[in-house]
Each structure stands twice: as structure tokens, then as C-alpha cells.
Figure 1 (tube, protein in one colour):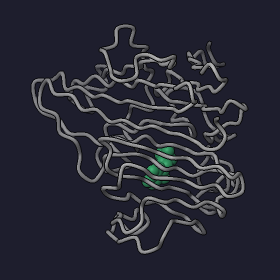
Figure 2 (figure 1 turned 90 degrees about the vertical axis):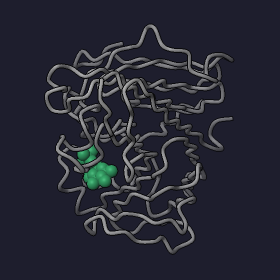
Figure 3 (figure 1 turned 180 degrees about the horizontal axis):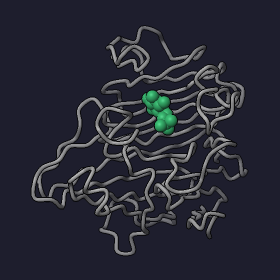
Length: 289
Ligand code: BG6
């Protein structure tokens, strides 16, 4: 299907009724629903869906730069570009069978992209919806250049939460983090679990492979499992910053939390011909049976 801007969307459906919607604008997952049709990802009511805007919600892909750590536009250009459906995907395991619905998306640099970032790459993202409604994103980046390049990567996942002050994040205890609100100064997390009462903008370094978000009011738990993506971004703009973001409602910070699987502190370097793979699986309990 196409949206009002003429952008193609692909709907994945599991036999039990869960679904995910993926837009070719940014190669971005815009919706992930349980079998009870509850939306699990946040999208702002003020989001701008017109390419080449970055869409505020779902799972924007930050590549080849995270934030403003480099000369490119904020979070790199991948989220602003039109992607293609990869009709001839390389075999990726182990997601090829058992009733899983999937789509392969592909981004290659345009001539204009090569002017601002002179590295030929192929970025493939396979979005998989399992029978149970789990959502996986398998990202592969190949260097098709004749010289090495380095990049950062993040799946800037906007989770929908009932009330941010009732949310707890576990799996980041005792980790070091870079605080974007303090010139990326390095701190060590002291508390048991993260709770939220003001703006947060951090990159947790080298986390374990699973992070959980507990939403007490909804009695819902998201689990993020990841491979190849050591860092975890946690972002909520809170009230003051929200008012400064044009495509974000003043009160919407209460109902979202970004927790990204990412590779930021140590950029990934690929030699010519090399390929990198990062995997993320999102699950939710108890909403999907
Ligand atoms: C976060 C960054 O991950 O993304 C923040 O750490 C930034 O600094 C936020 O404000 C949103 O970015 P953007 O470009 O989508 O407004």
C-alpha cells in the first residue's frame, strides 16, 4: 500500500494476528501490534511523513552516524532516504522458515550521498515477524568500496508506554554511560534499575545482550535482545525539550521511551568486501500469547 505521500508500506502479519508495518521511507518500522491490535511503538501525532523528513516514531535507523558525532546530518542519512525492497536477498539464517513473515529492505548510496560520505555500501535490513509476534531486525552492512570505512549504527526504537513515571528499565545497572546532557561525560550507573523523572539522553556502554522495559501501569514488559550492538541509548526529552521539538507534542514524552540497540562508542570498521551483522529481537509479554 502507499501512504498520502506516495511512499510504499509493507504489512507483515503473523498467523495469530500480530502485525508490523514497514515504510520504504527510512526503511523504518512504523507500527508493531499485538494479536489484540494494541500498538507497541510510539509515533508522534505531529510526525512528518513526507520524505526526506525523519519520521518521529517507530524504529528510525541511524546510519552511518549517531547524533551529531560527525559531519553528517543528525543521526546520518539512512532515515531520510527512500529504500528499496531487496528482491534477491542473500540467505540469512535462521529466519527463513516456520511461518515467519519477513521483508528485506536495501539502501545503497546515491551519487549525492557519496559526495557527503564517500563510501560505497549496501545496507540490508531484514524485518521479521515471528508466529508469536516477536519483531526482529537483522541489519547487514557490506563494504563494496576499495578502502575501509567506519560507521555508527542505532535502531532508535520508540516504545509506547502508558506513563513514563511508572516505567523501569533493567539490564543497564552498574554500566558506564556517556551523558549527552553533560558533554558526553562518562558516568557509572549506580541504581538498581532506571526510572524516569527528568530528561534522559545517555549512551550506555557495552551492555549485556538483554534489556527489559517494565510498564507497570499496562503490566507489560518489553525485552530487547541484541547481538553485535554493544551500546544502548536511552532517551526521553521530558517537558522542556519536548516543547522545542516541532514534530513532537508537548505532553507526548509521557507516553514514549527510546531504547536503542546501537554501536556508537566504538565505531565499526569494515575492510573492502567485509560485512557486519547486527541483530535485535523485540518481544513483549504478556500481550502476545
Ligand atoms: C537521541 C539523541 O538518541 O535522539 C538525542 O541522543 C536526540 O540527543 C534524539 O535529541 C532525537 O533525535 P532526532 O534527530 O530524531 O530529533
